[in-house]
Image 1 (spheres, rainbow, N blue to C red):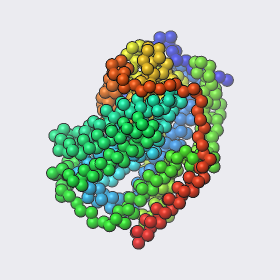
Image 2: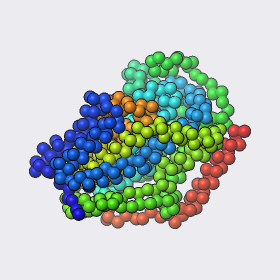
Image 3: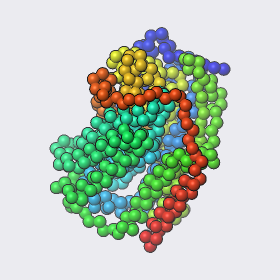
Image 4: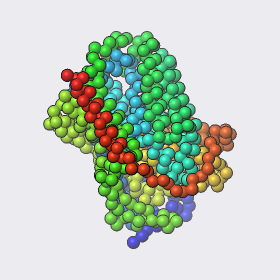
Amino acid sequence: MHWTQVIDPFNNIVLSALVALIPIIFVFWALIIRKMKGYQASLIATLIAVIIAVAVYGMPLWLAALSAVHGALYGLFPICWIVITAVFLFNITVKSGQFEIIKHFMASITADRRLQGLLIAFSFGSFLEGTAGFGAPVAITAAMLVGLGFNPLYAAGICLIANTAPVAFGSVGIPITVASQVSGIPEMAISQMVGRTLPVLSVVLPFYLVVLMSGFKKTLEISPAILVSGISFALLQWFSSNYLGPALPDVIAGIGSLISLVILLKFWKPAKPWRFDGEVATAPHVENKYSFAQVLRAWSPFILLTLMIIGWGMQPIKGVLNAWGMVQFEIPLIHSAILDTNGNALPQIFKFNYLSATGTAVLIAASIAVPLVGLKLSEGVSVFLATLRQLKFPIVTIASVLAFAYILNASGITITLAEILASTGVLFPFFAPVLGWLGVFITGSDTSANALFSKLQRETATTIGVDPVVTVAANVSGGVVGKMISPQSIAVAAAAGQLVGKESDLFRFTVKHSFLMLTFISFIVLAQAYFIKWTVPSYQMLDGKVAAPDASHGYGYLLTFGVIIILYAIIVRIASR
């Protein structure tokens, strides 16, 4: 039995779009006005989505239910798997006492909360986004800031907002790769276009973050640090995205801005370290009382995390791991049962890549770190079980959020909203980022939003005489500012920032900043489409053929990588004696 999606159930696209907005408006109302807990809001929103899909769009109830199940499965794996392992890695660092050394080391660089936020949330978070993505950067950086003594709400909120700059190039450029595959525009051209939009946001983001933390006057006190952090990041992001492609901008910009800021702090420091209200004042500078070996041991979980994620991101290694450890199956009864408006069957396949998943890389890093930080195996297991108990409500929230997203997509509700935006004619370039923003809000992923809307962006731009790379790139760029209010991201940040049950507070903290940044990007895209066309790169459309990845050298890569990990563990072990 097949069911064909209905995009305009009322034969009036405006009315259909208003009804399609109801589940999304409910999420805003529940979190901002009603202040519901995250898992409650997401479960009710899922139920509303099912009712509209069945009663308005004519979707069979069994298809809606199976779509929800498929989404919940994806929420559990790989999303929850990443969150669980990331928080586990942080928890073993705390349990072993090594995080106290990290806190002291950070204070020896700077005791100033503003600068710690830039180093960890902005620079280190960008690096993690470039290598891992899928919520891991926010989970890790938010947990680190809370561990350092940050107010949990500020820690989680700042990490969500800081995560906007790198999202477009996250997970080694996967969002742009997917946009290229769907739209037929070369990924280098999309990378260049995004790299001529986001650096404008990146250069002001450190200033924006610090103002949120400390106010305008206190922000001016660390102007040199803000300029170094923002300008170094933006320049490196622009250069790498325009000349190296979409895979490395986050890694290069994140590490480059971190190193640049640390070098600056060797020669300059604010006159007085700033702390949150109520915190005990500290001395202007703290000397590092720990040896290099002790610091290396304390940081070893995060160094291992970095190494593992880099290794797992290499295509040859990923190919080997998928060959040995991936199970994929068609979701029974729903696979190819839904047809789009063109009559094409929509595949519903669940991929359980348990070896190549980012969460597995994090788990391996954490497992290797257990003995390195001085914990027994039994203690590591206890910490893992405690982590599962800690995250029980976030797991429910994330699973239900993804169920919500899959119902909206499978029923055609998402496409209804896209169609109304595409009907704005010559103003479409202004609304093109809104489409990406909407896609990320619903799905929690810039990659998924690009898969949904890149083709529509290209076709609409061509119709109105605008270069399609402008609007396809706008989908990518607009999506990054939707990440900070996506219910999935809110749930991840709340879990890591010890804000379980207070997701509404976090949502209200970030939502106004998301709209402000979205408007900023929309005006930039409008200018690129009509007024500063010289910023658009030259390119030729793809022929539709996608080369298969070469995994022939995967075993050699994997062996070399394993030797590197073992050598590092031995070095830490010897140095710790």
